[in-house]
Image (cartoon, rainbow, N blue to C red; front, top):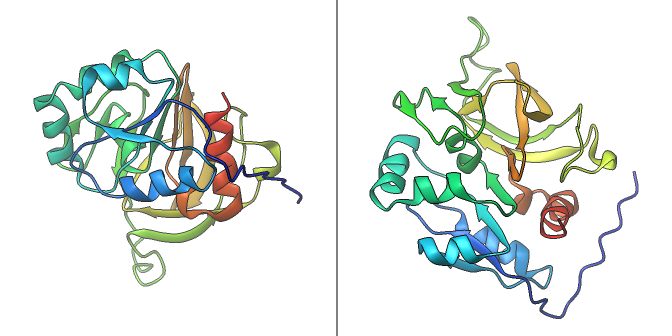
Length: 212
């Protein structure tokens, strides 16, 4: 496999906003973009988010309290209404789905799939540990921000819940059961894996998104 990632050490002007809300992992995404020369702004302001060229919706946390926060601050409607490219990461992907078993929570409904908890097969609890933590292979890529050279390559995951496979699945992963490693609908893209923690390949995913 050969992937060339030519990173510009000079700061590039690109209006990228990372949605600020009560979830972790936001700074690591900003730092990953900065390594590519892109200085992203972190903001929870509705007008600022709507005005951005690109929006990233990352996160690590708990779905119920996060959806409550989004609704209280009007960010649920803001995210649904966006017309520019939007990238959800990890919890961001799950919150962009229709429903999650985590707290039996209704989510944003951008993707028409449900999010379920990993349940190890009886007798395999020692092998099928939850959360799914570490490097795993993605496959059956359907383009978008995922390059063909990423087929059967490893990306970094950290998830106790997973999005089911559906028509909007753009990449698969298998842990206990096949699940959506990535989703795409119109201008909305999402990855269950963490591109900011997935080395050169993850950097390529972020670059493909910012290059849209």
